Length: 453
Image 1 (tube, rainbow, N blue to C red):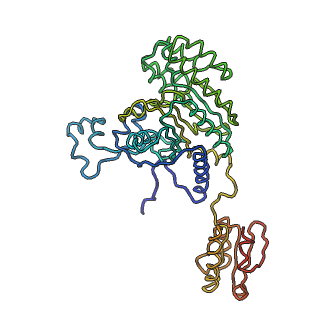
Image 2 (image 1 turned 90 degrees about the horizontal axis):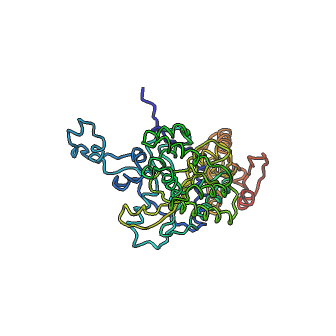
Image 3 (image 1 turned 45 degrees about the vertical axis):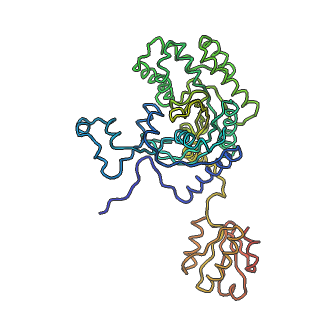
């Protein structure tokens, strides 16, 4: 017996109905991007590993899908490395390319490669799939779409304010109640300096980024393994659990971080961003979350993460400020800030809450019954006229029993069934059945558009 086909873990097929729902998400986000002045680009699914490696930290590098060199991929491999299972060296010898991990690093590569063609500041958006060799679980996939918006070539914090407004706009359009969590990497650097562990800032951010997944006690254990003293861990915990309003948290941080120039800079930036967002007005919640770290190493300022309030799932949008991401590609000092909507998690949220508009099923609006060759020819002429008027219509392809054709219409959620039989053919009319209320009317074929609208 032939083996039943399957797909890789962490990936999904999508039916026509599911694709109609996903396109509703993409179209909503794409419309918002354009409304806010972002311009679309695309980059290849694969990048050179030299572009990707070292940009996401040690944890991120492990999650890169690497592509075997074409042809004799073993020709560059040293036998001693193969025998010793020297994976880092073997990877370099076997693979020159990898699937993109996110859209931000490829975007940085794009900016550097095309910098003479780009007018700064440059606002771009990108909607494409990315891949991560992660352990699949609810809300976490190995292949998923990101919908990114970035601004490069500007240090202004008004960009952060606009991105928060963009998030608020999109979530409002989709009907998702959310809370935007914000922090600043400079605040985290100031905290590391204050507890006497400035050289452990990367270890601290990678660890506390997992608080929601593994809890504070396991985070403390990981920090201990990384060499933080018990005194530093004890001093860190209350900072990560600050409570009160955003203004009260900023006041407390100003006192705690008064001895750190970097930390105080982060507090001032956070204050400006929050005040700017409040001045615009918004419907979603916003919370200064000092435990928010976002483990990616390239963030240097504001960091953003969005949580759905009515569904237990990970963040559905994230992003932040990166001051020198393009520096690794030879262009230093180019600041940027961006966000990424997690379309797959948003899709799961909308499914859980049934927030889709009824009209996005993607089904054809009018199905013409096939009674035979001459009737089908007349139907096709009507279908052409409807399509030219922007109405989706189709002919059932086979001259099958009426019952079968009507069952097809029901299963596809067709709104109108049009019948041109021998009587209608002779009289130049068409009988239209409304599948919603069961009503039926006969009209001249030239008037079909008045009924099917």
